[in-house]
Length: 70
Image (cartoon, rainbow, N blue to C red; front, side, top):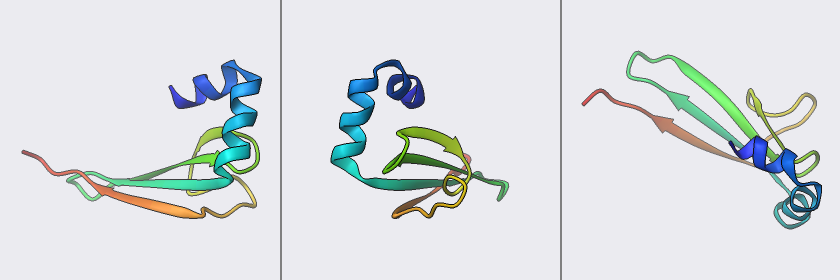
């Protein structure tokens, strides 16, 4: 949904990149120990992608989130 929003309006995407100037990684781990990462690039392209950072890039900040069964 974030990527759709960024890609739907060029002016809004450019504004977000101009203001944020950061790549943020989200690392999620489920209760089985399986991990998956996504990044939000608001430094260069204004996009969301799978992985720790875009190719050739590095995250400026990371969030580690662990999920537990209730």
